[in-house]
Image 1 (cartoon, helix red, strand yellow):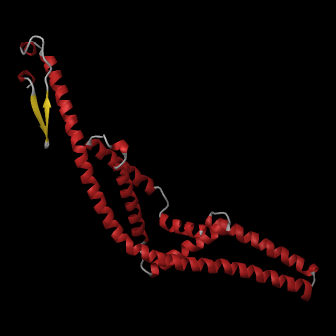
Image 2 (cartoon, helix red, strand yellow):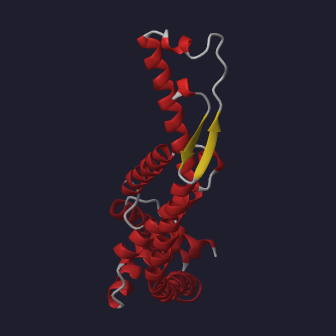
Image 3 (cartoon, one colour):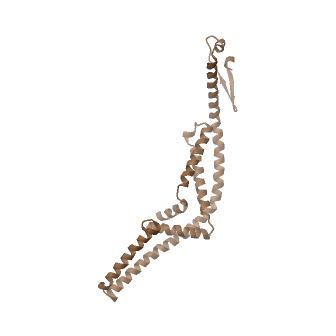
Length: 247
């Protein structure tokens, strides 16, 4: 083709004019080139044409890939919407239950203090009540240590509240037939699709060939799934408890 001079190259719907540089001795000099040089020139030409083909197909690949991801995201969000509404209802009940439990402990401690005060200054004396209060305090220490042995967590009011919230959440979820596993799967899927869309629109990926871009998206998805499998089994429930704790 180079021996015939300038030519036009068509890639997809675009046409490009290729200008062959002039030769000092004309076309005959190309004929005198060794076979190895001819093969090298041909390989370089094939490589450049393949690069052009890959670059011009990137935009088409991105548009198609983005369309598929957006459609998939809409389907997932449509399935997730009723679950979100049901979860909001469950969260409200769990929040009220956790508040009732925490206030019950507060009332119990207040009643204990009032009873000890009554017995100390009205019914009996401090000499009689001192060992009683000592054993009551030590019983509290034993109870907190037992809590640690049972839960393997330090006894903190926020931790106790979150545990109460989480245990009641599963109880209410079973009552309303709320599929926690499916909800978490949809959350992970939504997060993954949005990350893929963000990566697809990232300027750093604009000049990658379509094959390399597809490989990068696939590799990122595999890494994300691996990291999610190593996380806690129910991140959605834990995040709900943390959100209520902050509020």
